[in-house]
Length: 395
Ligand SMILES: Cc1ncc(COP(=O)(O)O)c(C=O)c1O
Image 1: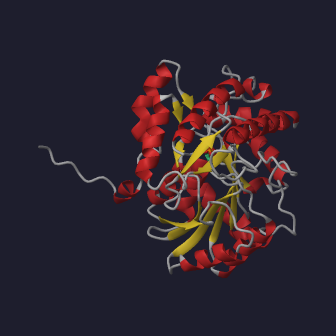
Image 2 (image 1 turned 90 degrees about the horizontal axis):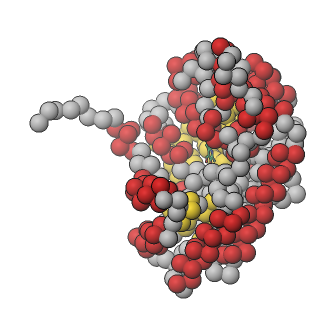
Image 3 (image 1 turned 180 degrees about the horizontal axis):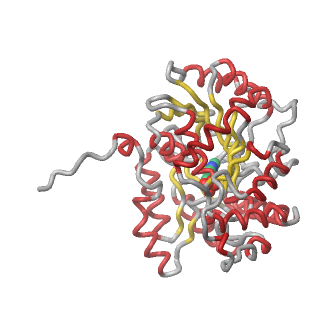
């Protein structure tokens, strides 16, 4: 037997693909056109027309290396939108690429980063792959913020160690779809300032709010609770959700004067630059009328309402205020991860996939996430009726 060298220790910390164990069955169903996928955060919508037509494949500039921090025209457009200096904008290969890069630039191996859960699952592996320790801190038992942030603050304090160096959360939240209010943000800002942490705010769903305001503010005004810790904060935004461009891998980090050199250095060695074709699409996307975003929001909101009315009498869950998920609370029906897996497998037999709660945090084993934006209305209705039938038989 040949003797192979060992794989990296951090690789062992990273869980396999979030849906790896269902992959072969899903592939079969996809092949036969029977898959109704509600597990991934995808959209059935196309990017804006202007973006679809933005890339000239015959222009040599589309194919050669481009500036590390991003195409100047794109950086300018983003800087204008967020009323920040051009130099503070770094275009990245999606938020995923931005977080990967900053995890290496801000932290040293073995340091700890607090992650408010339930959370986007890839953050755990991103931190582990940078030889860091993600430390999960649940927002509450039911995955939704309490009225007051006192319990969360206590919980954050309890998870601090001499190695704690950062805090990550998504605003709005994936998977539960809540938006932290100013009282929460103020508490988190004070916590970050007091313990001298880096703050990573993931705004992937910033344009998908369904309440009175339709997006997270582009600019943090001087009264915004996070403004006072601006020099410790990095905001991560993406074209994946706002413009249905996930396949093109374009996001950006908003940094500040002190961090420019560090980001530039790390970015060069991390993956150099984001795809030029995607950046050109992003420039065009930013030039589209706000109607695109408004229509997208309307469509998702009506799909959310459809999903809520299909399931509300069967199981408890909070109606999401943002993003494109429902985080189903199955604790009354199920008592273990095994029971949830059985349910998910039975759903898969009928072609429907949901994401299991444990991938969003260890305290959410008996939850499941349903994505309502991945299928058009007709197919979503079909999928919801299958989910409903399976959940009813559990009662
Ligand atoms: C909270 C959150 N952040 C980041 C991402 C990934 O963003 P990107 O496609 O820009 O890498 C996702 C994707 O689902 C997400 O839910």
